[in-house]
Image (cartoon, rainbow, N blue to C red; front, side):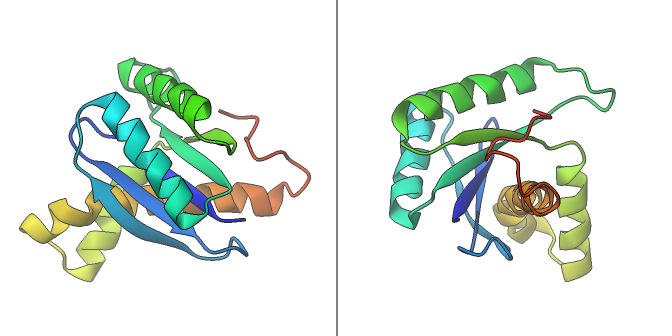
Length: 148
């Protein structure tokens, strides 16, 4: 199943997509849109363009598992996507994904403008990779993980 991941940000939103066999998650771009409705419509266009069969939105929980404003925004965004796309929309705990993304970019020697241009898409890739791992370990589970 082709799955599109979304790393929701205030200014930039990263996207990643996996192959049909759910083996490889790859960055697929960054949307620079602050207006949430326009952003939701842009993500819906990406879902259609890529033939995605599901969407995973990163859920930014605090390290203690609690949820703040960013998590509420992610839940609201996922709810809006459910209204406008004809595929399941899941939430995936994204604690630590930005730190992991920065680590990958450090290893690749990406700094400055180059780094800012891709960090959100790399974070979306980490979110998607975590979600794919969950699906591999829980093949009987529905598209949406029970731990959102």
